[in-house]
Image (cartoon, rainbow, N blue to C red; front, side, top):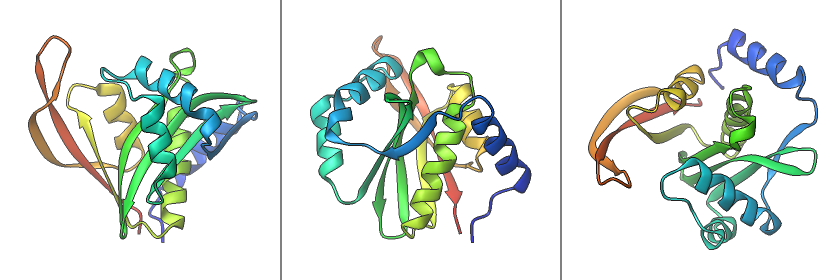
Length: 170
């Protein structure tokens, strides 16, 4: 049984379909890897390459989904599954489309697919000062369960803390 607050689901559903009816979440393909690498590089300090996305697509224990607006990939979510747990490795929306609630809809859909594969618990790490990401995760039911000191290294050499978050799906 999924533990989703009904009001949150209703709000996300309405936000997704009101004005976003041409959005669809689907499995990524090899044709998407260049665009995925572009979105990731624009979103994170160390972007992943096309080859890294190709390898993830080939792994049976990885769920890599894209958010399409029409025929254009504008976001993605990727998780690695082990037994009944998963780790959300990354989620990103193209910068032009951020701030419209799309990441929440993508994440909720992605979590639903993980639950459908038997995943009961999802973990993730987020940079402690990344307020937008933390709000997204908290809104979708994740809670802080730990902290990793100096986990992330910035281009400047500065080391930042990571929060470990968890979301139960059952």
